[in-house]
Amino acid sequence: MKKSIVENQTLNSHMLFFDPINKVVAVKEGKQGYSALYYKPVKPGVRVLENGDVEFTFYAPNAKSVQVAGIGGYMGKEKHDMKPTGDGFWSVTISGIPAGFHYHEYFVDGNRCINPDAPVGYGCFYPINFFEMPDDDSEFYLMQKVPHGDVRMELYRSSVTGRMKACWIYTPPGYEEHPEKKYPVLYIQHGVGEDETSWIWQGKANFRQTEALQH
View (tube, rainbow, N blue to C red):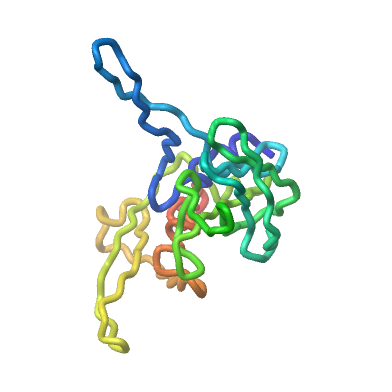
């Protein structure tokens, strides 16, 4: 698998971080009781390797067991035991996960947990970790060095429920500069258990644009 694909920002951005930092603040004790703060790199929660394997990592220094599992579909629901790496982290590398989008869950001592070091979205009616397994044909869908448009959240009142609803709208590059120009409209609904944020944070619909799509 191409390095340019597995390291593309599109695969690692999510609703909390566009460009995941993968760092923590650590304290270093100095002389005369002074201390200094510095950044310490941490392992990403999920990482697709160039050979197609997926490395899962979870920080749980006091845990007795840590597992990771898919929610069904191509990844399945099998719980994979993670092994401690000696620095408070647990890790496991899984082979054979096919290309596609995968929700997955972590279990610490049997309790389902969110991995704060892995991409997070809203799916299955709750916050959940996810990753995307690319293939060698994925470059069309990844972020390219071309102009990108804007995403805005609009609020409106539902005539059915009477409640305020939110929708996310993507407008192409130059939209504000040419208000007289007409564009086709594509309405995309989220899946069961997801919400209006899904096509942005999980689907990355606003990134998946190439030069060919702008003409």
